[in-house]
Length: 355
Image (cartoon, rainbow, N blue to C red; front, side, top):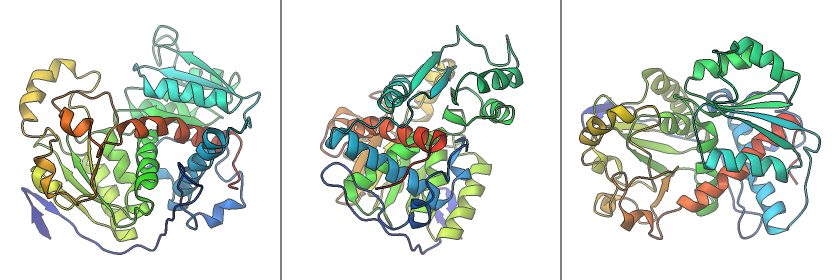
């Protein structure tokens, strides 16, 4: 057991996966890792997508390959591809959004389907109608449920009583769609991400939780800096430790952001004050002092380091010099929210054969 900063770390080594750049200018994908899924078009059909913990390495790679394939076919080749013609998506939003709503609605339309948006004014989960009844009703009206909610347990209950796929658009514990977009962006940027190191600087929230459920499976190391009392959930850390042991990667924890970025290829942060935490803003701003991502903080990062932020961004989280620099991939990352949610939608509702 070694120490980094004030928090102990575990270090494990090894991974066999491969990635290679293909598909021309904009799209890069894992070329060999998902062979077992390429001929099984419907392998994910009917599945729900609540957390990346539930998805194997090959299944995650298949989703990332699908996203790259769709981006190449539709954006680069201007191909009309409408496999979800006649399919409908019920979108339940307890929490407002820009990227999540637009990427999902436009993505569903590009695939030929129809998305029906339900705001808190249209539906009150577990209030006007029980989650069980909502799941039963929507199962007869749409082909898939997309829910952006306050509590992961609501997603799990909705999934339990639905006979159609349920997609996690965000909960307080996980944001798996954002993690997929982040890894897609890194594959496009680096080509091969095996052995790369991501430094997380910020709150131990749903974004880092989802990155942790995926990183070991893709051969990516994590160096996580959070202030005291803002650490990742212990059960998520346990799950990630098991994955790191299985896939031979390392995860390190610290309270010092400068230490976390040492040698990192990717630096990621997120909001310090999530929706529903507005009353805690002043205390959080004080607790996160020293966590603003700046060029000075990143001096010890790898020469090829890049920056990610899921947005919306506040200046206290990252300064303009980093955010608008050539190191920043935030707009590419935001666009990839569309291609990755499209990959999830088509695989869960129809299945997808990689060309």
